[in-house]
Image 1 (tube, rainbow, N blue to C red):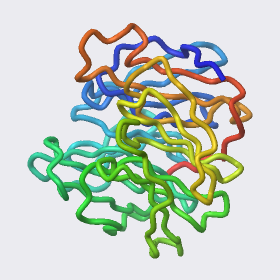
Image 2: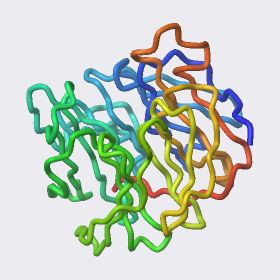
Image 3: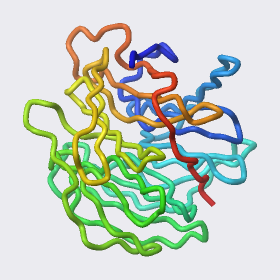
Image 4: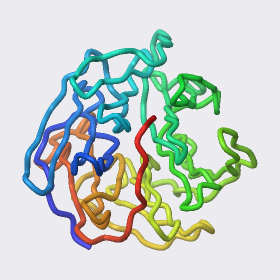
Length: 279
């Protein structure tokens, strides 16, 4: 596998690549740049949407709009660009971070303190009808979230723990939290993740310059070096969900290279799972 440049960009904190099948496009964000980016690999067309707050994640909605995890809560953009809050919960010093849409169409949105205060974040579930439940409290940096192909397991990363954890899932409820794998000291920190059609978990290693693939039993199956030091997340995209996209950051780096902050792609890297829209 060899990474290619999909989009040259200077994102401070690129995050959360997500394939939007209806639009034939890849969506990702620059959290600190307050930008939502889209890229259509078929045509090369790009768009950039400026948000009024730092944006931790952007996901497609079933109505064609976007749902966004912002500093003060979760908002939505209608297809015509009109914005409205879906769940507003401002907490001084806290912002939204990574988020994911569950198989039932609910949004699981994480948060963190700007100064990474231990326990300063959480993970909530926002149902399509607007109901909000707190899934996890006492989270430091809520990051990668994904589900097994049968929807019965949920994988989750609270980055400073160095762990990828797994939960049993029963609808909106999770239980039986246990460690799937731990990233050893010196190899970077687990960040965003995606689950492939084999049920394996791909995770980006912040400060590790690599992706890892773990089997459902937690065995390390593959290590893929990257030409960036701070990869943040990965997702399968393209019409057949076989291309693996990787977002990256340049924040905090001395003399970042031209690729750092860009969107990378590994063509034909595997087989992804269809991702539902919110709603």
